[in-house]
Amino acid sequence: MTASEAEDKIAAEVKRLKALLDEDAVDRTADHLSAETDASVRKAIHLTAGTCALVAIQPLPFADIFVLAPIQATLACRIARLRGQEVSMAQARRMLRELIGVIGLGYTAQQAAIGLYKLGLPGFGGFVTIPLVYGLTYGIGRVIDFYYRALASGTPFSRKEAVRVFRSGRKEGRRASR
Image 1 (cartoon, helix red, strand yellow):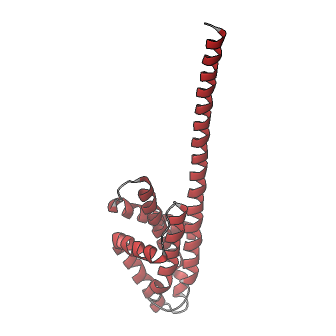
Image 2 (cartoon, one colour):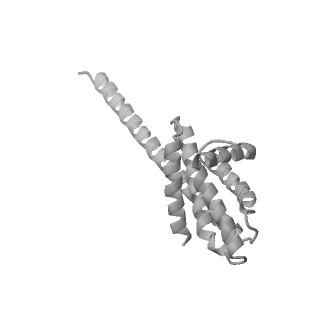
Image 3 (cartoon, helix red, strand yellow):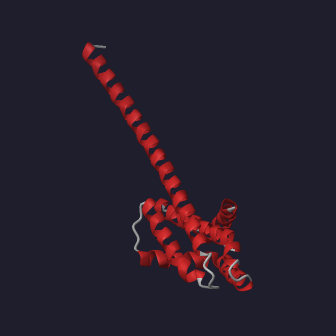
């Protein structure tokens, strides 16, 4: 092998190693960005769940849905943005209605329970509902995130999995609210 061939071979090997290192750096950067995004989504869900729980203290029975829905739609916009999607508030509301249709009975039952607590325990009922509202909003946030992750990855949105994610998130949110 001539010196020129050896230099070419070394240059090719250096180029190959550089490409591998660059690829590894991109993978690590993507993992880091993904972890940052996941943390930002969790933080947004917790902050929104806390906000909704505080708003739920208001004493008017059955008024929560009109107050909480816009806050939860704002969460949907935030998660969409964090997951690389731009949606309008109208699109977020529409998507939130669709997701609530998927998780339906759990959402409806909790809204009814919140209203009944406030009727049965005027003044105090709002405080009793804090874990319910926090858990409900947290579960909704998890389903919204599940929806946008599926959209970003091109994975079909599974209603059955969405219900599972909601129930799991609701339990996790209730624990976190205590």
